[in-house]
Amino acid sequence: MAASAPSIPTAPAGKFRGLLLRAVSAVILGPLALAALWFGYPWIDLLAAIAAPVVVSECFRLTPRRPMVRVIAVLYALGALVALLWLRHQPVLGRETVIWIAVCVWATDIGAYFLGKLAGGVKLAPRISPGKTWSGLIGGVCWSAVASAAVGLAFQQGSTFTLALIGVGFAIVAQVGDLLESAAKRDAGVKDSGSLIPGHGGLLDRIDGLAAVLVVVALVRLVVGGDWPWA
Image (cartoon, rainbow, N blue to C red; front, top):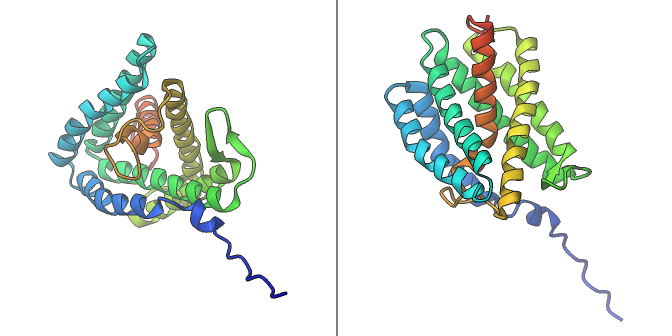
């Protein structure tokens, strides 16, 4: 009897299904977002003005049955946009701060996605977001720490060790923001907050972690004052 041909493993390809579409969307939209962050007024203000009605409509979509939650969600989403503008328009290190935040959050998403897909393992919050794992969280934390330290070196600002620790905190805050949105989607019975971005879903799906970090950084800076965290 002839030996059967060995099967070719297909799991890795299945794990990363949809990656190409996500990558294409990121390649197109990422530079535009970075350009707005870098050049500031009026581009960052225009970006926020375009994003505002989109995030409000997506907040409405995720909360049809909870009026009070809807109000909180809208205030939170708009608060994140206000935080973005306030931080970017700071006269000292405003550009550096928002780029640093964005890079850390993107690094968190990338690290969590790849290590989570490759390593798998114990679920982080199976009832809220079954796809998230503790290994993904670890990957996101590590990538964010490295990214935070690298941005500090690139801008020649802050302590490398301190910024790496703050990067860890950013990754955790970003994951909490992600889980909050996942809980809202599960409650609403939808997979995505919208269909604006191919491969990513709605705008809230793309900025859930970023929104949480922006709000936290703005609040801390209001309390601490100065040029935190660069000083």
